[in-house]
Image 1: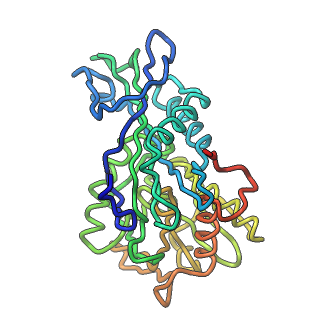
Image 2: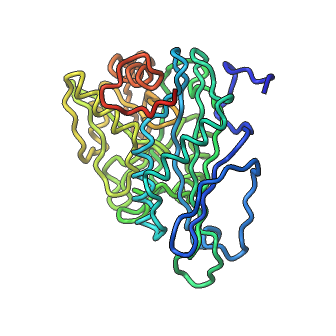
Length: 339
């Protein structure tokens, strides 16, 4: 612990003191327990291993200069997890139990919350898996809920900067009426091949088009997409996009800034009209986009002419970060504060 250099942390895994667990058995959730064991013992026929009954969330806790720890919008993560549970037939974890477990995980690992000013934060990873043996394709009877935490560094090592993204038409992330709106591991496995190809080509992410028509913008791999033009914040409407809590927050902040907010279908051709664009999610808040290349169509949409983040993206980024760290007023009560 004493060897941690807070300002040099990567976005990776560092062991902490405890993780939190809760078991679903006999039709009910048990008690929340803490453990130092970092392994899970699973039956070889567990539904999570064979049929993908697995869901997760991601959120962060921040140390303020007032010494208080703020967990950003955990109730929204609890609700999104419940939605995922409905989608893949797992028992819903009560919001109250989720909140209690998250707070306990943070408090018991308090010494790993990076100090204010380091640019780092405590990443919180809730995980829910089907554990009982089941050879037939049907839901498990027993489930394990786990929360572990790890300190992570800022997403941008070189500061808030733009990156290019690429459209790869030969890959789909999720079907229009599939599991795209749920936070399940399979969605991320489905995007690994395209994501790795994009990285090898020098892009930060894949911008997926809709799987049905290949005409409309969906997601940027593990993040939501937004574009800005004419004082309007535009983000895609789709039946295969994970509802991002960060995006939801940015839409509210954009309204507060006097901007119009539109959630609607965005055609690929419209990309040429955006003054700014970005990926948004828990890891980076906003990752501004410099350009979008459509390799197959030999098209390139230049978003940032000077290669720098746009003023609205920067303002939204700085505003949300200020709320997360307690430097700006939290008028919507987004933060769960631990004294």
